[in-house]
Amino acid sequence: MEKTIDENVQGNALDVTPKNNNTKKLFIESYGCAMNFSDSEVVASILSKQGYNTTQILEEADLVLVNTCSIRDKAEQTVRKRLEKYNAVKRDHNPKMKVGVLGCMAERLKEKFLDQEKIVDMVVGPDAYKDIPNLLAEVEDGKDAVNVILSKEETYGDISPVRLNSNGINALVSITRGCDNMCTFCVVPFTRGRERSRDPRSILEEINELSVKGYKEITLLGQNVDSYLWYGGGLKKEFKNATEMQKATAISFSQLLDQVATAQPHMRVRFSTSNPQDMTQDVFVVMAKHKNICNHVHLPVQSGSDRILKEMNRQHTVAQYITLVEKLKEILPDCSISQDLITGFPSETEADHQDTLALMQQVKFAFGYMYKYSERPGTMAARKFEDDIPEATKKRRLTEIVEAQRAHGAYRTQEFVGKTTEVLIERSSKKNQDQWSGRNQQSIVVVFPKETYQPGDFVNVKITNCTSATLIGQAVGLSKA
Image: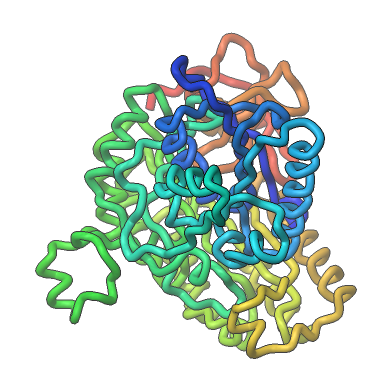
């Protein structure tokens, strides 16, 4: 399951059950992180009330939207190629088609799309999706349609997302937006704004609705879920002091996680993404308390060198990270851990690179997402550091990290051989239509013969073989959990 940057950028046309009274057609694609895919579901919900059904046929769309990622240059280049495709279809097949760009790339480039490049009709930042109906009216009037204003509050807590391209089993539930951690390499604080948390009541209402509709697993989603803190809304830093925050009877992430798992004991619960500096032991305790909270933590480390971590403005050291991992394993021995790593950060030496490989060897991550450093305009790293690592060196170091992760992934999957693991069936295997594919509690993919089982079933599977990323086995019966 290790991915390089080229593999991690993904997009898909999304589809929902049409509403009979809707006559206009929306084609929407999402690229990048899970939050973008979740946001696209919010956009589809907003536009469904404006008379739009979604379509998978680009040529017939009245409105084409692309939800964008700015985390890597490769992601932006992918979006630009898609915009070229949209405009070619608009020119050759459907002159009345409107094209809009959403998300982080819209926030970063703003009016440039309209003024300099003239390749879209509408530019909408991550916090402005409720304004899309007004922006569409401006487009019809021949005006520039731009809204990239960042909010101080959770923007979409009152919207019930339209589940796009859904398998009816897994769903994303947004709990926070934005990020206060100013990592020098990252554009997220600039494109998604400051951290704000969503009202826990609306979170629980959404999850309860998903349960009624038959969903079996939800992922609590945010740029940094561990910093979730609800005390009435707004920015955390607007409170004068900790005492004032306590008076507001704040709900932390561990408390929210406990509430969610308690409310839906038969629904699997996952969460992503965590930050080492904000992850606390009480989260591990809650995970151990509830069988329906999956035994997997995605815990980005970014580098195994303390010097590079400091240059990245990461608020943890290697030793602190290892201590956190050891505490997690003490409380949850069967928990899997995955990582994010960046190689080729400015000034990274061969010794720094070896430190990263040493950290990987010590932890032996189950899987991870690995990237070459990509300078992002506007970030502190772009302003402060020279991108001085040769491309060939970046590629070589990335290859070494990916190879190490493949070996460690094989080590972790091998631990399951001969054991029985609970799997939630999600879909047919891509490689073999006679097999089901799903994930176990540790978020590792498991494939096994279909027999009489169905998507959405929790099945116990005896593992007989494995690859570095996949478990292979035979079902031994439905899970009674």
